[in-house]
Image (cartoon, rainbow, N blue to C red):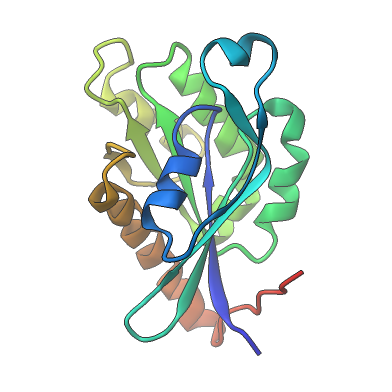
Length: 189
């Protein structure tokens, strides 16, 4: 039986989930991109409608599944489906976007059960922008939910930054795997 860890990337539309997964995946990633419509079409040509999928093979042969959620509210039913058997979460937040703290709250609410069970890492993209709140505001937001999660500034176009996010979320998942013995099985459909 195939045993692997499954990790999710989530965040608003256009934050870089598809880019991050494609950047570090050892195989050609699978994406469910469709033409963007409405207001979104003004900022990007395509959007994820179901999921992104890639995988990373570690030196010991373990395979890590990388799943990206759709960012649009109308596809949030996929969040529930993708959370099943996930062992950790990377929440990407665009620091330069107005309402970035509201975005973070949306994902803390939407993935609360998964975060409580496995942990999460907050990846702040475009963190060099002065438009967003102080970095401490993200820590305070997370603390209001009763979590202590790392907030890491990153450039999602750099493989080493994406790997840093993955290393952080994997390190949070390792105690879970140790406590529960074997890793959960991943069903391939």
